[in-house]
Length: 189
Image (cartoon, one colour):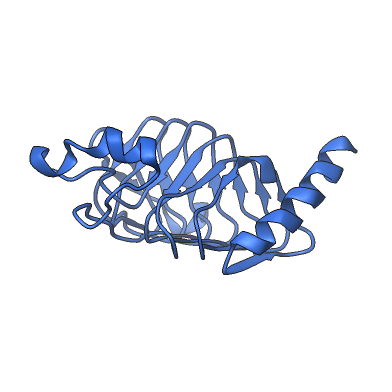
Protein backbone atom coordinates (compact mmCIF):
# COMPACT_ATOMS: atom_id res chain seq x y z
CA UNK A 1 0.00 0.00 0.00
CA UNK A 2 2.83 2.39 0.91
CA UNK A 3 4.47 1.90 -2.52
CA UNK A 4 1.15 2.68 -4.25
CA UNK A 5 0.89 5.98 -2.35
CA UNK A 6 4.53 6.91 -3.06
CA UNK A 7 4.09 6.01 -6.75
CA UNK A 8 0.96 8.19 -6.97
CA UNK A 9 2.83 11.26 -5.69
CA UNK A 10 5.90 10.59 -7.85
CA UNK A 11 3.70 10.22 -10.93
CA UNK A 12 2.12 13.62 -10.19
CA UNK A 13 5.56 15.23 -9.76
CA UNK A 14 6.99 13.59 -12.90
CA UNK A 15 4.00 14.75 -14.96
CA UNK A 16 5.23 18.32 -14.56
CA UNK A 17 8.76 17.45 -15.80
CA UNK A 18 7.97 15.29 -18.83
CA UNK A 19 6.83 16.73 -22.13
CA UNK A 20 4.66 13.64 -22.44
CA UNK A 21 4.04 11.08 -19.70
CA UNK A 22 1.59 8.32 -20.62
CA UNK A 23 1.28 5.43 -18.19
CA UNK A 24 -1.72 3.30 -19.11
CA UNK A 25 -4.14 2.35 -16.33
CA UNK A 26 -3.09 -1.25 -15.83
CA UNK A 27 0.68 -0.63 -16.10
CA UNK A 28 2.68 -1.32 -12.95
CA UNK A 29 5.67 1.04 -12.60
CA UNK A 30 8.14 1.81 -9.82
CA UNK A 31 8.39 5.59 -10.21
CA UNK A 32 11.29 5.86 -7.75
CA UNK A 33 13.55 4.47 -10.51
CA UNK A 34 12.87 7.17 -13.12
CA UNK A 35 15.58 9.80 -13.70
CA UNK A 36 14.24 12.46 -16.11
CA UNK A 37 15.92 15.53 -17.59
CA UNK A 38 13.66 18.05 -19.32
CA UNK A 39 10.94 17.58 -21.98
CA UNK A 40 11.39 13.80 -21.98
CA UNK A 41 8.78 11.39 -23.27
CA UNK A 42 7.74 8.20 -21.47
CA UNK A 43 4.93 5.92 -22.62
CA UNK A 44 4.15 2.59 -20.95
CA UNK A 45 1.35 0.41 -22.31
CA UNK A 46 -1.41 -1.48 -20.49
CA UNK A 47 -0.46 -4.56 -18.53
CA UNK A 48 3.27 -3.80 -18.49
CA UNK A 49 5.35 -4.26 -15.34
CA UNK A 50 8.42 -2.03 -15.18
CA UNK A 51 11.01 -2.60 -12.44
CA UNK A 52 14.05 -1.06 -14.14
CA UNK A 53 15.83 2.27 -13.94
CA UNK A 54 14.78 4.65 -16.72
CA UNK A 55 17.60 7.15 -17.15
CA UNK A 56 17.30 10.11 -19.49
CA UNK A 57 20.66 11.61 -20.46
CA UNK A 58 19.43 14.41 -22.68
CA UNK A 59 16.38 16.68 -22.92
CA UNK A 60 13.76 15.34 -25.35
CA UNK A 61 14.97 11.71 -24.99
CA UNK A 62 12.19 9.14 -25.43
CA UNK A 63 11.46 5.75 -23.89
CA UNK A 64 8.43 3.97 -25.34
CA UNK A 65 7.24 0.61 -23.97
CA UNK A 66 4.35 -1.41 -25.40
CA UNK A 67 1.67 -3.51 -23.72
CA UNK A 68 2.15 -6.59 -21.52
CA UNK A 69 5.91 -6.11 -21.33
CA UNK A 70 8.01 -7.05 -18.30
CA UNK A 71 11.34 -5.38 -17.51
CA UNK A 72 13.17 -6.64 -14.43
CA UNK A 73 15.79 -4.74 -12.42
CA UNK A 74 17.74 -3.44 -15.37
CA UNK A 75 18.83 -0.09 -16.86
CA UNK A 76 17.42 1.75 -19.88
CA UNK A 77 19.67 4.73 -20.64
CA UNK A 78 18.39 7.05 -23.38
CA UNK A 79 19.93 10.04 -25.12
CA UNK A 80 17.67 9.75 -28.19
CA UNK A 81 15.14 6.86 -28.19
CA UNK A 82 14.61 3.39 -26.80
CA UNK A 83 11.53 1.60 -28.15
CA UNK A 84 10.38 -1.70 -26.65
CA UNK A 85 7.40 -3.43 -28.23
CA UNK A 86 4.55 -5.42 -26.71
CA UNK A 87 4.76 -8.84 -25.03
CA UNK A 88 8.51 -8.47 -24.45
CA UNK A 89 10.41 -10.06 -21.54
CA UNK A 90 13.57 -8.34 -20.32
CA UNK A 91 15.27 -10.07 -17.40
CA UNK A 92 17.30 -8.54 -14.56
CA UNK A 93 20.74 -7.00 -15.01
CA UNK A 94 20.12 -5.98 -18.64
CA UNK A 95 21.55 -2.67 -19.89
CA UNK A 96 20.04 -1.02 -22.94
CA UNK A 97 21.87 2.12 -24.04
CA UNK A 98 21.32 4.17 -27.21
CA UNK A 99 24.62 6.10 -27.14
CA UNK A 100 28.38 5.82 -26.55
CA UNK A 101 28.20 7.68 -23.20
CA UNK A 102 31.39 9.59 -24.08
CA UNK A 103 33.16 10.87 -27.17
CA UNK A 104 35.65 8.45 -28.69
CA UNK A 105 38.18 11.32 -28.78
CA UNK A 106 40.08 11.80 -25.50
CA UNK A 107 40.38 15.56 -25.97
CA UNK A 108 36.57 15.78 -26.18
CA UNK A 109 35.82 13.46 -23.24
CA UNK A 110 38.56 14.80 -20.94
CA UNK A 111 36.14 17.28 -19.34
CA UNK A 112 33.29 14.80 -18.78
CA UNK A 113 33.84 14.35 -15.03
CA UNK A 114 33.94 18.11 -14.45
CA UNK A 115 30.90 18.64 -16.67
CA UNK A 116 28.94 15.99 -14.73
CA UNK A 117 29.71 17.72 -11.44
CA UNK A 118 28.20 20.93 -12.80
CA UNK A 119 25.29 19.03 -14.37
CA UNK A 120 26.13 20.27 -17.88
CA UNK A 121 27.58 17.41 -19.90
CA UNK A 122 28.27 18.28 -23.54
CA UNK A 123 26.47 15.67 -25.64
CA UNK A 124 27.33 17.22 -29.03
CA UNK A 125 30.29 14.85 -29.58
CA UNK A 126 28.57 11.68 -28.36
CA UNK A 127 27.14 9.34 -31.00
CA UNK A 128 23.55 8.26 -30.34
CA UNK A 129 21.28 5.96 -32.37
CA UNK A 130 17.84 4.60 -31.40
CA UNK A 131 17.39 1.05 -30.09
CA UNK A 132 14.33 -0.96 -31.17
CA UNK A 133 13.22 -4.18 -29.49
CA UNK A 134 10.36 -5.76 -31.41
CA UNK A 135 7.26 -7.53 -30.09
CA UNK A 136 7.51 -10.99 -28.48
CA UNK A 137 11.28 -10.75 -27.87
CA UNK A 138 13.05 -12.08 -24.79
CA UNK A 139 16.30 -10.60 -23.47
CA UNK A 140 18.19 -12.85 -21.03
CA UNK A 141 19.75 -11.61 -17.78
CA UNK A 142 22.95 -9.53 -17.75
CA UNK A 143 22.80 -8.83 -21.49
CA UNK A 144 23.89 -5.53 -23.01
CA UNK A 145 22.08 -4.00 -26.00
CA UNK A 146 24.10 -1.21 -27.64
CA UNK A 147 23.16 1.84 -29.71
CA UNK A 148 21.56 1.45 -33.13
CA UNK A 149 20.48 -2.17 -32.61
CA UNK A 150 17.13 -3.56 -33.74
CA UNK A 151 16.02 -6.85 -32.19
CA UNK A 152 13.56 -8.58 -34.52
CA UNK A 153 10.15 -9.98 -33.60
CA UNK A 154 10.27 -13.06 -31.37
CA UNK A 155 14.07 -13.03 -31.09
CA UNK A 156 15.76 -14.42 -27.98
CA UNK A 157 19.01 -12.95 -26.63
CA UNK A 158 20.88 -15.45 -24.45
CA UNK A 159 22.03 -14.49 -20.95
CA UNK A 160 25.21 -12.42 -20.77
CA UNK A 161 25.23 -11.48 -24.44
CA UNK A 162 26.56 -8.22 -25.86
CA UNK A 163 24.42 -7.20 -28.84
CA UNK A 164 26.23 -4.85 -31.22
CA UNK A 165 24.34 -5.59 -34.45
CA UNK A 166 20.73 -6.18 -35.51
CA UNK A 167 19.16 -9.49 -34.52
CA UNK A 168 16.92 -11.16 -37.15
CA UNK A 169 13.33 -12.04 -36.22
CA UNK A 170 12.71 -15.47 -34.70
CA UNK A 171 16.36 -16.28 -33.99
CA UNK A 172 18.33 -17.09 -30.85
CA UNK A 173 21.57 -15.15 -30.40
CA UNK A 174 24.27 -15.34 -27.76
CA UNK A 175 27.85 -14.45 -26.95
CA UNK A 176 30.14 -11.42 -27.01
CA UNK A 177 29.56 -10.15 -29.59
CA UNK A 178 26.19 -11.86 -30.02
CA UNK A 179 25.91 -14.19 -33.00
CA UNK A 180 22.99 -16.20 -34.35
CA UNK A 181 22.89 -19.64 -32.72
CA UNK A 182 19.82 -20.89 -34.55
CA UNK A 183 16.51 -19.96 -36.09
CA UNK A 184 13.34 -20.61 -34.12
CA UNK A 185 11.21 -23.00 -36.19
CA UNK A 186 7.58 -22.21 -36.92
CA UNK A 187 6.25 -24.84 -34.48
CA UNK A 188 8.18 -23.23 -31.55
CA UNK A 189 6.89 -19.70 -32.11
